[in-house]
Image (cartoon, rainbow, N blue to C red):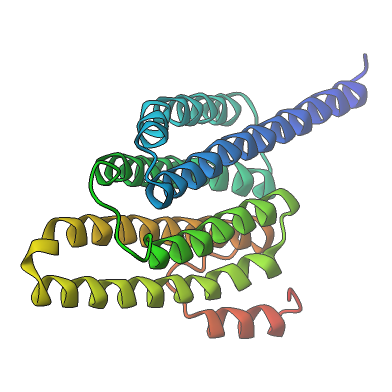
Length: 241
């Protein structure tokens, strides 16, 4: 094989490695989505067994993070990635960290769900948590979909949608405080609901982080500490949006 042919072979193999990495990230994301959905269902349905099952299986998410991280390190050590490929690898390393943390928050929700299942359920069947959980699940799903398609426009929309989750969390926080003030006997359950809402709000933040990494992958621009309006103006000005 001549030098040109060898170079093409190496380049093709590297592209295959990168695609394999992306597929593994999406598989990890799919597992995290499943855990999140099951954790919220365990709470809403009062299913203690399901909550405990989610908590037991969190190790699978951790193992996937370690394996993908090791593969990223191997590629960085053995290849000479171009700027765009380097951004992809860096973004993957950051993304799997956020996915692992989403898994941790889902585990918290699942454990609280298992405990609350042993108590009398409220009349509203945790309606607000169900709604917040649905919003959060959609944000995680959309961020993974944008990652799969490397869709920076969709990623920016997801960053804006995280504000809705923040507002819902604040509403639940005010409601829980009111319940505790009106009837101290509800304090234990209200605190548990508050911790669940907080975990879901943090999951929204992690989904937003993943979306910010997508913009970095596609445009090479770190938008983590920049107002979204300014980001969009800059990308439009440079013809990238």
